Amino acid sequence: MAAPYHHPRPSARDHHFFLAVAVFLTAAACAGVAEGRYGAGRSTPVAAIVSEELYSSLFPHRDDVNCSKGFYTYASFIRATRKFPKFGGTGDLVTRKREIAAFLAQISQETTGGWAAAPDGPYMWGLCFKDEISPQSSYCDATNKKWPCYPGKSYNGRGPIQLSWNYNYGLAGEALGFDGLRNPELVSTCRDTAFQTALWFWMTPRQPRPSCHQVMVGEYCLSTADAAANRTAGFGLVTNIINGGLECNIANNERVNGRIGFYRRYCQVFGIHVGPNLDCAHQLPYS
Image 1 (tube, one colour):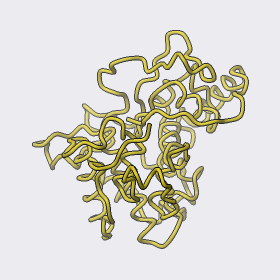
Image 2 (image 1 turned 135 degrees about the vertical axis):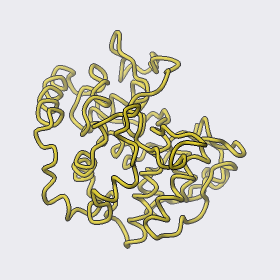
Image 3 (image 1 turned 60 degrees about the horizontal axis):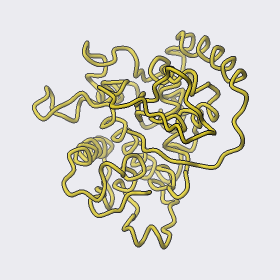
């Protein structure tokens, strides 16, 4: 689940404006008007590495009856990457492949429907669920006055990255043009919005955290505090950024092992090495 964070931003825009934009985007993107029409998307950095055929082979169970049939489409994924051209487009080919593998591994663990004895193995079940299973709360931080919770709304995990907490929904909505506080459900009802929020989270640094993108493409600069916390660059640091408070500084954590399992599989498919520091067992989480 995407970890909570606080990040100074300009004042929130008027919620009524957000609502109008959300209605427009929902009509345009969620009604499926552009479905299947990614056209020149095949020439984008990500599409040049991940074809529709490969995508289907990486997520063979995403349309199973007990998963989110028809939701995690290749077309929506590619359209979302267009909004973030540096994703999968930074560095040499190995670096680009490694970032894509890391992103797909993290969202696979967040949405997995697999288990140890699952058909085809546990690492074939990424992009199964779009909503958090049995959320323990509404994930409303009532102390956050900048991004106040809207009555009756829950900010539980949704979408590929399982976006959580009212302030994350508020920030994502501001960045992407929808009212995340009044309409958090868009993240699990609109295919394009779902992938866009996942990539927004991946690409956006939030002090003191770097972005996952910065870590995977070699743009992460180790601070004194990071060095003291053993937060060294690698796939394990990405896990720390996403859910370190629940998974890091813990030996043999099951969820961390799941993330690594997906990552190893995707790196093997892409024909690349996994790189250093796969886990975060000895990293202190961000506060």
